[in-house]
Length: 267
Ligand SMILES: Cc1cc2nc3c(=O)[nH]c(=O)nc-3n(C[C@H](O)[C@H](O)[C@H](O)COP(=O)(O)O)c2cc1C
Image 1 (cartoon, rainbow, N blue to C red):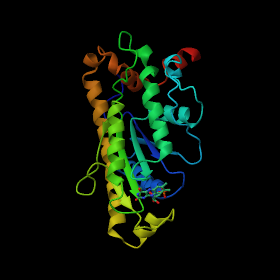
Image 2: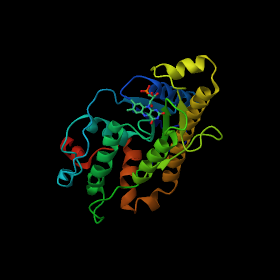
Image 3: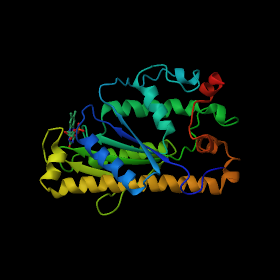
């Protein structure tokens, strides 16, 4: 595997803002991405995805992805975000807490991602069971904030970390004592989109903790993505004998990960 020595590749860090507003989730995400760029100059490439008003239909359990090689029958915002997700080495979700959990739009994306990707990679995995999510080993960090304290921030982080594991990815926390299993904040009951930013300007400690934990989370996520990259290169021969690692190996070798059929169509 060429070009895996330190300094010769960039980690692709995808930030996903899960709010329909350009508000506090986006603010924390921007702080986090900025920290990663500062910590690893020239070594990180960031992209921000905003859920905004793009429609994401829920999974309707149609099962069509089984005969569509993992493509989802419903064409909406899903395909674009899925491709960005597949292309990333590390992913930071930054979501507002809704009803003590994650927003519905983000759950719609996650449900469809999990079910369809199980068939998406079947061409990489001959001889494997038809539903198989390979070891994608993306690093995932969770940032959550609500308007209240003790109001679902940890629930949402735990859910996103569990999602990472189901997707054969690696959940990471930031640094203690501010980040236990992700980064979290609250707006001290303020509803405005600029609430956290205003609280920072007022010197409020909880808002400062939210920002510091989001920043350390991003740095640790990129660091772990580098560790994964070096680890894969070190035991490449061993991993190349295991179908579950083939998509990851292809991604590192070619710099991107595409649906096998999409690749054939372009050839
Ligand atoms: C449908 C809905 C449900 C919410 N549920 C919670 C909740 O359970 N806990 C909480 O602390 N805040 C809750 N909030 C408040 C948002 O999490 C809070 O306003 C957050 O700062 C919004 O983030 P944004 O500025 O990125 O949109 C809820 C807001 C909405 C719209």
